[in-house]
Each structure stands twice: as structure tokens, then as C-alpha cells.
Image 1: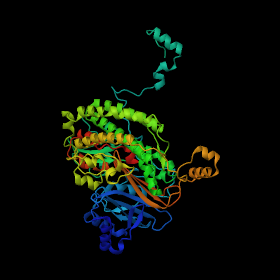
Image 2: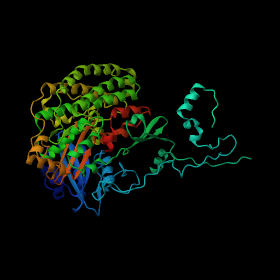
Image 3: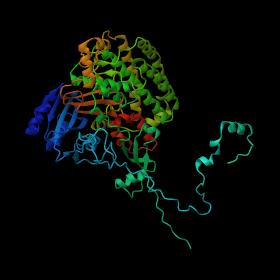
Image 4: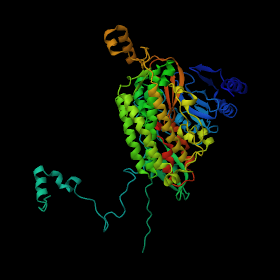
Length: 210
Length: 412
């Protein structure tokens, strides 16, 4: 099935949920209503031959309503053509159905869109942040996020000053105690002048005074 | 009298992950591999669930090298972003430059002169050889064949010298411009490339002799990390990994860009989809790249390398200093950037690691509204858990090496 036939049949199947195709630089874009995206993807994969999800990307159209959009780029290995589907997502209800059930490769792409824009994907098996760390509070690719970033707490590390406790045997017999001298004092040659260093090299047996 | 003390042990990061996933209590061992492991080729962390020495599950954890390239791109002109593309797949910066330039040119709806296209082909193929050489060298080293690494790296050195000759930098080349190139190639470049093409096939043959029939190498790679064709397509794996799984798909053939339709070359395809097949595909791709490079320098067209459109490329410096109109073009070009039409385009090219795509949303003006980088390493890494399941811990190293990803591109 070629691209035009696939689009026609998709329009017959889903009716008003699919917009007219928009062409730009030889690329076709269809806008699909939000609740029909999984149905559209399933149909295009099974009957349209679009077996690959090349890319999935969020876009923030700040100042417009609906503010966000999610772009799906489908590829057909048999037809050698791309098709872009676009879903618009409003700021109040930022949930889109996940297409991980259609292509398992959508997993990380949707996690990235969630991480960067805060768009939630319903039905995603593991919707966690992927590029930023767990516990980060912002969504950096939103237009209202400043380029310089917002100060944030860094993630907890497994070992830090609060979790490290002194060893229970410390101070007991046969346990090395903490050193009393600083590392510089323990290394007296640090203070040597060049003449002293040469002196020690020529007379290695001479006792060092600390 | 004996007293019993209860001691609390400090949790390791892997343990913390396990607690987070709510899988505490199983008798399997959770092991952290990376982010500082030599075989992860960068900063990839993999949480492995092991049953003895067998991998039950693997969760790749990416993002340690996230620099916000897409955010940065939204805040600068199209030309200013070129140096950032060097740092995506930093093992093949020339190829990234080429792909990015074509993406923006597609948005502008412009074409570049034939000489520019041929030089870009030379850049892309040199980058492919360089990237595959590193991939194979470290592949060999990871499975215990140290010698290969030394052979391939001495060849890569020559490619770096050529990159320096053509662009002025060995590593961060930033060679392309929107609508052309930073400069035409210098006259000494072609002889340099010719002598490289004369010597290089001998090195491939040597590596071939060292690895392809090497019993240890074969046993460590055959049937290890099998990626079935259907799964590879479902995940969206591209590049040598997809072709290793037996899918004959190469953007240079199916959507020829940069005059690739003029060149004769074959696309190697694997049969089993294991690590050995991916190795063979890369070996053959280097030979085919040599073929393409020979054709490119034999048929190199004369003429300008830059498109004459002064509203896109910076005009001649001399003209800027003597003529009014050129001065205005220069000023507008530097301060406001290239005025792109509103619209959205996706351009992808066959990079060494797979399909590198740039999805540009423009609302008009000099900066992109959104620039999404479709990085092949990011997508290919998703296949890791599927490939690793059921294999031994030591096979993980083989699988990682045969995936040949680079974290600069994965994390962007």
C-alpha cells in the first residue's frame, strides 16, 4: 500500500479524527485527535505497512493553545517512505495514550518526551525520567525553562557524609587509630629546599629531622 | 556471654535501584556495570540482574552525558549549532556536520553545488571508516584481541591527519556550513587520500586475518547477542546493527542524498543477527567505503563548493570590506542568522552508527523553534536488554562492543 492509499484508508477508518495531509518539502504530516492516536498507529502498522517508529518528539508551542504537540515519525521499510503524525496536547490535560503496545521502540522516546516536556503517556510500562535524574523537578525543554537552568538538588549518592558512620571497632585494641599529623606533616620532604634535597640524595643515611 | 550485634550495611547504588523497582527479596544478584566501566565506551550505566553468572535482566541507564544540546539549539542560529554537532557522535564528527547541513538545507529548500556534495561524501565515508575502525579495535580489545586495536588506531591516526588537512581540526571539525563548506579542500588533500586508500585495504585484510577466522573471537561472538529481524524493526534499530540482523536498509540506497546515487557500492547484510554478523557487516562497510572514496576522488567535479546565495552563506571577506550590499548580508547573517521559512522537516542520513536524523520545527527566523536529534545510539541501546538476556556476564562486553554506540550522541 503506498503512502496516499494508506492515508486515504486511515481517513475512511477514523473519519474526522484525522486531518487533511499537510505537505512541506516532500514530507506528509497528519494531525490526529488525541484519543485516536493508538488506533491510528495500530492501523498504519498492521495495514499500512509502517513497521518502524523512527522518532517521537515533543514540541512546546508556548503561547498557543493547545500548547504541546507530540510528533510521531513512522517509516515503512517496504514503501521507503516516512509519515508524520501529530497530536496536540493541551496544558491542562497533558496525557497521551502510549504507543509502546504498537512499537516497543516507543519506550525510550516517550520517556524522553515525558522527561523533557512533562507529557504523560498513559499505558507506558515504565514512565520514568531518562536523561535527567530521578527527583529532578523541572522539564528542561519547555519554553518557560531558562537556558541557564534552575538550581536543583543533586541526586542522593549511595555514600555521603550522613550515611558514613565510624567503624564500630574504632578505638579498640589492634585497630589503627586516626593519624594525628596532617598529610603534609607526615611527608616532611615537602618542606625541603633544593639544597636539602640534594644533600639527602648524596648522604641518604643522614637522619631526617621532623 | 556472647552478645549479638545487628549491623547495617551501606546500600550500594545497585541495591538502591533494586529497592526502587520493588524487587527486593529475590535471590538474584544485582550488579552495577558502569558508568565508569571500560567496555561501556563512555558513561553508560547498566543495572544487571544476575542469576549466578547468567544475565536475567539488564536495565541500561542513560543520561550521564546529557548536555542539553536540543535546548542550546533553540537559542542560537542555525550556523552556530554546527560545532555542537561535532560533539554528538564524537567518533565521526565529519558525518554529523554533513547530516546537519543537509537538514537545514532541506528546511531552506536549497541545493548545494556538485563539488560540495562529493566532498561531503568523502567526509561522510572517512568518518564511517574512522568510526568502524574504533568500533572494531575496541571490539577486539574487549574480547581479548589487543593487537587489532593497535592496527586500527594507527589507521585512524591517518584519518585524523586528513581531517586536520581538510578542516583545520583533527577532532572537532565543524567543516560544513549551511549551503556549502567552511572552505574547499586544500590541493594536498587528494594525494593524501589516495595514498591512504592504497595502504588501507592491506590493514583491513590484516584485521580480517586476525579476527574473522580466529577461533577465540568466533566463539566469543557467534550466537552471542542475537537480535531477531522483527525485534530490530520493532525497536527501530538502524545502521550496521539492523543490517546485521538481515534487513537490507541503507539510507544511502533507499533515499540517496549528497549524490550517493552516482556511486556504486554494495550494502552488506547479515543472516543471523549475532555479534559476529555485526562485526562482518562493519568490516565489509569499510571496504565499500574505500570503493566510494575512490570513485569520489576520481570523479570529483570542479567548480565552487558554496551555493551562491549570499543570504545564506557569508560573502567573500574582500567583498564585505569593499561593497555595501555584501556588508549588509554579512551583518544580517551574523546577527540574525539565516531566515528560514516556517515549517517542519526531518532529514536523516546513514551515519556510521545508524540513522542520524534532525527534526527541525521552524516558526520562521534565524533560530529553530525545536531541533530534535534522532540519535541512532539512543534507539539502538534499547535493544540491549533483549540481546543480553540469557547470556553470561562476560558476554555483556561482547554485546556492548558489537552494538557500537557512543554516549555523546545517545545523551545529547
